[in-house]
Length: 309
Length: 249
Image 1 (cartoon, rainbow over the protein chains, first blue to last red):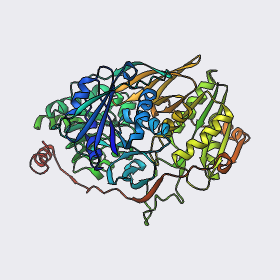
Image 2: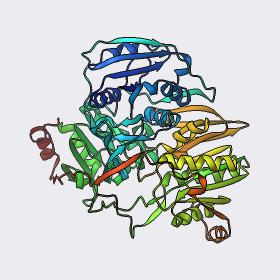
Image 3: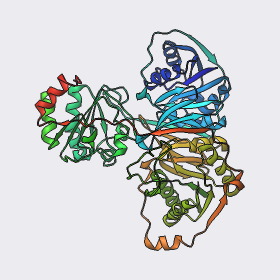
Image 4: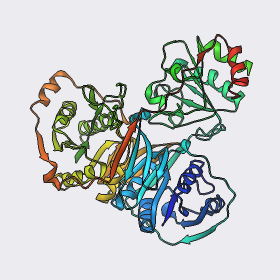
């Protein structure tokens, strides 16, 4: 039996964590199908057909899938599920919303946020904010899996497979999509950025966050992240939050400025390749994971760093 | 409307986790336990809905060992009206939890269920979705705002790109994000009053029993440790190291 990957997309194109999820699916050693459900999403469906290793793209086009409502998406997935051994989705706000419901409809549990695959029924996943790593074996008839994208490489775009239109329309009428409030930014997306400059409560205000963090991020072409404390204090919008309850990132370079490094924050960034910390407190936990640290006043150090790069 | 809130007793979020030396799990003996932080948001929201006159009764429940009565008692001190403990000496997995919750829903017929979006121990983040699916109810996951009007709930969900607004038909299952509210602390008089509020204890066997667990934990290990790096004296040294040692810029 094949594995089915649920595509996260914006109708026009695929979202990047999907490519990592496809890599995880290919590691199961089975044919991999991708489900693209959306409204007028042939752009995303064609793109999915160009991902290397994908055997088939299923494309469901209906207004019912426009806002990716969990009720409708899960009903469609559950209808297709009996033909598959594994159903995978990225462990993003998209996948975390839809996949448990699809699993529930099929009477299965979910294996959440996997970072490794040992065999077709055994997976590795972090628990306790990444402070422990569990290896779990599932006996569910269909394995519903969300995939942590930072743990798998991106699939390449060197394939070509067919796109099969499917006519099933699942419209539960239980919920209605009203609006999305998306944060506009010209910066790279946090989940794909090679460099992230991240700020904490040490920035003291929204204005200082902007005047200190942005020039450095501009110079490096970096995405901007933040600790929960900085988001809660209103320095920056909450889609920038990195950590246990925000985004999990693993860039090439992570520069942590004025953030102490609570375990909930470390859970979201400690797999970064190189970590730099700037903090006035030499005992801040962030220094325990940083490759390079500078102890001192960030309001002097960061502008100097921006200038020196 | 009647609201059902579910809570879980977990290791306090401030405690440093220690993995057992036999790799069978995480050390929980003599460790401070507390209500799962996201469930505190769920309790708080239910209490606020009652204070606004939207909710008439709040029932709080957990599926756990008898010691979890302390967590239910904490929820009662925060303003829940009564509690149900589905007692099980064994750890109950998400499908077993959902099985027990379905029985409670049959008996209590709530119009709204609120729970944390995930528990900070196992971090499955799935009970809300599993339960909504099996009840055939609408769901709002990772919600930061709830407005009830008539037989509908307007909710704002936190997403990776910002937020989205949905309208849910009631009854519904809503999972709480940390931004839903700032939970209150229980006052001493309310803690005293909570001691008199009823906690019904039902053995899980009477709830149809735990469904056969489908997930076996083979081992639990500590995460790979990062090597502690170096503290550099100045920006020039940092830039030099980033360029020539880490080759990161």
